Every structure is written in C-alpha cells, then in structure tokens.
Length: 176
Image 1 (tube, rainbow, N blue to C red):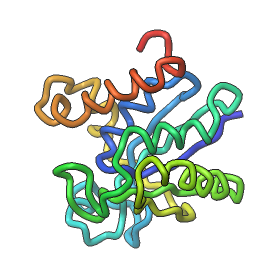
Image 2 (image 1 turned 180 degrees about the vertical axis):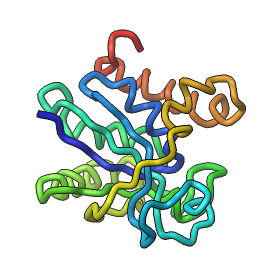
Image 3 (image 1 turned 90 degrees about the horizontal axis):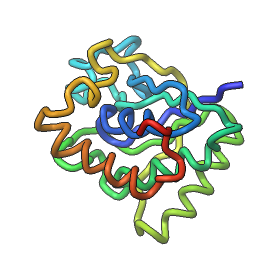
Image 4 (image 1 turned 120 degrees about the vertical axis):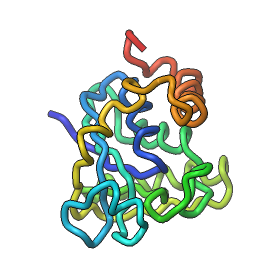
C-alpha cells in the first residue's frame, strides 16, 4: 500500500527531480499547499499573496523506503536554515515545511527535526498539518528531465541531484 509525503523545500522542480531518483518512490507531483486560495495557479502563488508553498507530493512504498528516509533526503538536499528562501528563490512560497497527514508523520517529522538540528544549527522548517494539496499545472511535471540544459536546472537543480546521488547512492533506482 502506497503512502505519501508532502514537502516544501524551495522550488518544487528541485524536490521533484531528487525524489524521482529514489527506489521505492512511485510518483512525485508538484503542487501547492498551505494557502488560503482554492486551486491556485503558479502565477498566483509566485505573487506571494496566496499563502501557498511550492510543494511535492511524494508517493512511495513504505516497504522499500521509509518516511524517515524521505525526511532524511529532504534535510540533506535543501537548506532548512533560510526563512522563505532557497538560494536566489525568495518568498514565502519557497519556505521549508513538512506537511503531515497523520500523527505518526508528525512524530517522525519532529524526530527528523531533532536529528538534523545538530547538523544544521537553527532550523526554520515548519511542521504543519496538510489541509489540501493542489496539483501544479502540467508544464511543471518532470521539469528537470524535460529541461536539463536550462540555466536554472544546471545552476540549481543539478548540484542537488549530485548531492543526492553521493549521499544516498544505496537508495537510488537502478537506472539513476
């Protein structure tokens, strides 16, 4: 039975590209969560006025990869110490959030925060209940795969993928 994790750690293109490479992950969908507008668009979210964060919904097989490991990847591939920012991506839509769906996920998120605080120092990652996940527009799906040579992909996403491949080599899909 599949489970899901909804995470915000900067641009959703970065997170999607990373989680797509992990063994046990069946699907990663970019979207929005945490805001006050129903069915927001990318253009609306980019204004910073909807309250949404760019997120990914990671569907995974817990018999292959645990929620705790999903969170370990999360805390490794993005900077959880910068408020409303990842690199040059600035705004509340780029905040770091773990959206939980169950009390067990909340407890695991709190444990991961405690595990990574000595690594990072002051962490600003929020832990919040998931109210609604809104899928992003189709053009955001597989962005890194479809645009590997774009400047953003080369400068921002590729280094995160390299870090993932180095740090989680034993967790990668065979083709990655």
